[in-house]
Length: 268
Image (cartoon, rainbow, N blue to C red; front, side, top):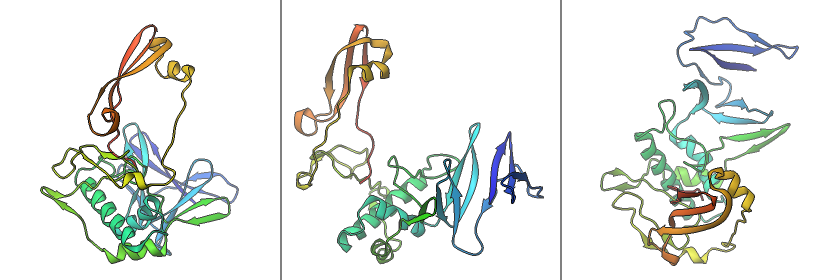
């Protein structure tokens, strides 16, 4: 097992010896450059995470400096990337044509994001803020769970290199599991606000969240003792006047005007 860590503006390489201690390894590599790790005997690298769990990540992995810290970055081909994303964003048991549509949407979203990277050290994140990416497999103790599926791999292969185009290039194909019955505008000519008649056909769609006064006070301590909350502006798209744009939270002795617009997207 090997470890690359940051030390100031340099990278340090260590290996785990037989007694369980990390030992620094001297190297002729430039410690100011990015080191890329791949596995010559397989197509993935196992990355150990805090707490002892792990991920098997295809292609290669590197430690990229980010501000005063560093991030683990997986450099992976588009099609290998999709092999993890598609089954994470849509159940692999769904019909083949649905999986193909998801593959095209996921590929388009990644291609569009890659053209305007989120960071100087990586293109796209691996959470619901972008698209869920778990890698080839996850490890917990002696248990290894493969995250890919034959059905989604077939859908990806069946749509190889296909993306959706808009009027200005590859489309930003945002998607969600539910939009509440009305899609909000997405900042592009093809992402218009419109009613979604299919949203109401979802099963088990209702959900609720209960917030105590103490949680609200803890989140917004400047208001003092919480007294009320009021939506003062909505976007006008859908039931009840649409999604909340502005919320006023009142308390004694203060009040807080908080923007509460919808996030850019959520994962399926």
